[in-house]
Image (cartoon, one colour):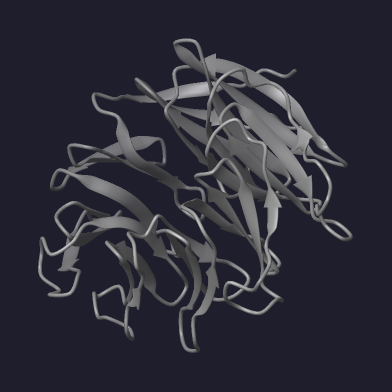
Length: 338
C-alpha cells in the first residue's frame, strides 16, 4: 500500500464538536466543545471564539461563510474573509435559549436546522420559511437530499423528505430508532442506520407510510451509525467493527449478503465517500489509536493506503484529493493517487 503524507495543522486542547471542508475544498473549519473555532485557508489558521456548547457546523454553498449552532439555541453565521458574525435565535419563541440546535445543513436555497423535535427551514438572515416539520421524538439525523432540492430528517420511527421550496413532505414510518440517514445520489433510495444493528432502505418509488416494505440488511455486531454511497452504485455501512458494501446494481441487494471489507479490528468511527463515490476513507479504533484506511473504487473497493494515528474526527474533501483527521492533533492528509 502507498504512504499517506500528512501535515500537522494545530494542537487541540478539546475534542471537536464538528469539522468540515468548504464545498470548494479551499478551507477547513472546526469547532471544539468550548466554542473555539479554527479555520484553515491558504495555509494559515485563523481562530475565533463563540459561546460554549456548539454541536454542529455547516458551510454555505459559496464557501464564504459557515454556520454553527448548539446548546444556546442561537445560529451564528461567520464570514471567513472578515470574521464578522451574524446570529438569530430558533425554536418556538424564536429567542435565544429556546431550544438546542443539534444539526444544520446549508442547501442551495435555504438552511435546515434540527431543533429538538422539529426541523426549521430558514433564510441566511434567519427568516423562517414555511411551517416547521414536527416529529414525535427528537430529530436524530439531518442531511441534504442532493437529487431532490431538499433535506432528509429522521427521528424515532420516522424518516421524512422535506422539500426546500414547495410541495408536501414525504414520510416513511417504521418501528425502531433511526441513528443515521443517507439518500442515494440518484434519489431512488434513502439508507437508514438503526439502533437494532440493521440498515433499512426506504424505496422512494413505493407508497409512503407503514405499508411501504423496506429492504433490511441485518447481522451487524453493533448499531449502524455510519452510511455512505459509493460508485457502482454501492452502499457502505458500518456497525460495530464491521464495514460492508452492498451492490444496488440490477435488482439491488434483496436476498444477498453484503461484501465485508477487511482492515478494521475495532469499532468503526467514521466512513465518508467523495469524488462521486469513487474514493472512501474509513476510521476504526485500534488499541489506543485508530486505523485510517483510504479506499479506491474501480470494479470493487480496494484499500490503497493505511495509517495508524490518534483520531476521533474525520473530514474528507468533496473532490477526494485530501482529508483531515483530528485527535490530539489536527492533521491534513493527501489522498493517495493512482
